[in-house]
Length: 386
Image 1: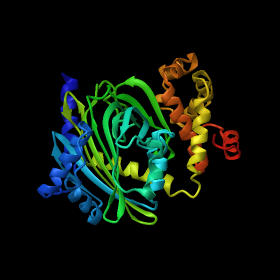
Image 2: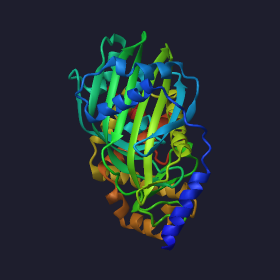
Image 3: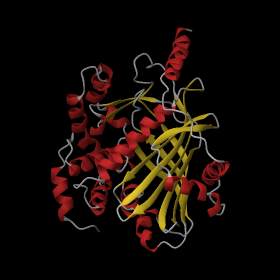
Image 4: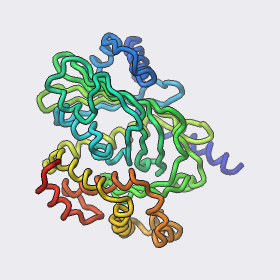
């Protein structure tokens, strides 16, 4: 009973901190565009009707507001955020929509890992070649399927979640330029939230995943939380030779006891976090050629899982050193799991590969890393991609 009372007190506290602003009203044409685009994730075989998305594309092209609250959809809280990248669309596709690379390469502060469970295209193309189609694009290219995703520890609660998404990616000509539309809708309730932690400043991309249910926020370790529903429409419009406008419409229902504790500010903070990570990578003068990142990823995939775990043992030792003494990482039960080797055995192959790729990217960008990968850096830069 006390836990239930505390839960509702916390719920009202979250409501009280809402200050993003008034909800952005939309004409009926744009609301219909929202519904149509989200329906594509459920039924991707339906034909793409240009008139059903023109209003939203024109809105993004001419909108000057960076953020606002969205009207609720299906009891989900919504928020919008827009930013500009100093990059063409081809570069964004090559680094961020390329299955030859882990998805966290372009989204390190948002995504722990993501991978396609199944995928198909309208033209029989491979998603890895999508970036090469930009310059000769004459008609829409559509990819659809199911993607599994896990996020990084939440800024507010420390929780992280795994879930399946119905996903659609559309690359198409529009208004004398090119546009990329990324649509996702969560299939079912997520896995139960687990305790995670941001180690140091978030921009260092050091995260710890306990693999234990609950939330890290004080007083909420007992909570069985879930992402109940989510939907997202991301639109990238190239507006110049080295300029792409990025706009995101996101809706989310998450919490516990089937109550939505999400406020628009929470979604906006996550979108800003995502944008900052993307800008750091895309705008970096040290960003290596995409071929070098692919080479490193291929080297990792050739190693056994046991070899990867052995390499990452040093990573967690270093992570413990830079984490506060009060960190989850330095708790007695976690340290016992490290000593026994149990923790590394719980980390699956997908997680190991994503983490090693992220540490390599950090080294390339000049960020501090928890692994000595200089030898691999030299090897990659001297070898050719097979």
